[in-house]
Length: 143
Image (tube, rainbow, N blue to C red; front, side, top):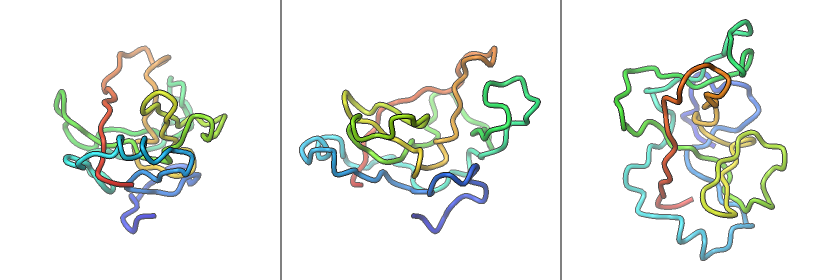
C-alpha cells in the first residue's frame, strides 16, 4: 500500500497501490517476460486525473458510482495513467470482478481489491459519446 493515496479514492472497496501485485498463479517465466525496463511508468497518484462521484441523476450507465475524469488539459496520444492491480491467471482472478483487464492471453490485471486511480475508468458504452481514451499494453520493471 502507498503512503501517497489520492485524497479521494472512491468507493473504499480497494487498497490503493502504485505497482502491480503479482499473484503466485503467474508462472515465473511469464512474469519475467511481462516485466520490462520500467521506462515511462507513472507511479503514484496522478494529478492529471481525479476520481469523482458520478451524480445519481446523470444520464450515464455508472450514475451514482465513481468515475475517473481529467483534472488537467490532456493532449491526443498522451499517456495519462497506468492500470495497476493484481496480475494473475484468468482462472485465479475474481470471477465476478468488474475491474479486469486482459494483459495477454490467460493473464489479467484485476483492480477489484487493490488498484490505482485507473480502476475508476468507465466504459463509454451507453453514454451516447465516443471513446476519449484508449488502452495500450505497457510493461514495468518489477512487481
